[in-house]
Length: 332
Ligand SMILES: NC(=O)C1=CN([C@@H]2O[C@H](COP(=O)(O)OP(=O)(O)OC[C@H]3O[C@@H](n4cnc5c(N)ncnc54)[C@H](O)[C@@H]3O)[C@@H](O)[C@H]2O)C=CC1
Ligand SMILES: CC(=O)C(=O)O
Image (cartoon, rainbow, N blue to C red; front, side, top):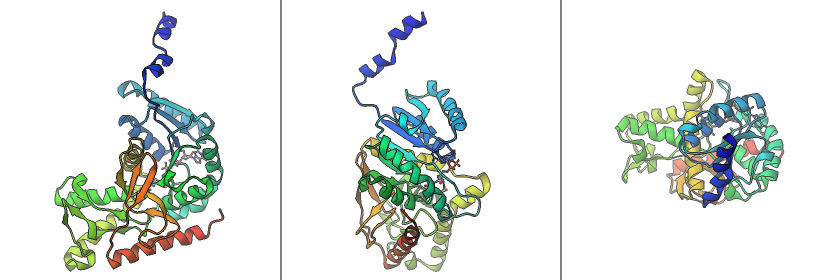
């Protein structure tokens, strides 16, 4: 009986019925962040096939079993655990593998540990996933994006980092919460490093074209400036505050990564503050950091040149310098 049903409903038949190539993604690192990304992508029907990879085989198998038991509740998705050699020409590879911050550590403190891991990991990705778009999440994400670009030799458009997508979400959430507006109606960007030197673009914060302070925070009253600075401090310190309490951040970055993956695989031309290679935009050269950029099936196809106030431009330049100094100490 089982044999008869198997013949009737085999996977081969399902593949034949589908008239498009399946969307395939690989997640490297099945830790807190990798699994939050996997879960968020599954429940948003983002991929047809998902392969999870981790050096910790035991944990990897447990995580994948747990996800598989939820498959009856979602749209069909093939979920597998394995190694990069099991990837089958994926469209996108999401890299969350590596060390994470302990309470009190900065993202930059992780640099040497994660570069060491990437020197072994990236050549394998190049070998097994030569056509994929690479989405970096591992911190310090801007430098890991730069390192991946150099180690992979992939074109710049195909290597991007989650950058300040998460910080921008935190910024929009906190601002919108103060004004009792849906965060999706709040246009606001955090640019530069995903880290301590990140920059709030106050001059561009608006609701339906109504600017909060078009001359920048320096044009606000002292009381307003203090209040706005308080909001930005919460954004900048958000990861420290969460890590202090629960040891890692995961849900929000999982949702943010899903947003980026959908922008790529569904060719959405979304403007997102992903980290990408910047050369000749806003006076910044030869570094990866976040500026609003157009994201679609090709990856990052355009970085927008923002008209910043002199103060914002100086802060962005400082952020680029922080990143370039850290990159300058690396042996790639
Ligand atoms: N860009 C962003 O906005 C965010 C970045 N992160 C970063 O994401 C990274 C991961 O964080 P968590 O998941 O919380 O850490 P975690 O420790 O829970 O997971 C990391 C996983 O990577 C695996 N791993 C290590 N080396 C590997 C290799 N060579 N190949 C495959 N897997 C490997 C480990 O076995 C572990 O399961 C950290 O660097 C963290 O700072 C975290 C939150 C937000
Ligand atoms: C950990 C981290 O980078 C974040 O939550 O922003």
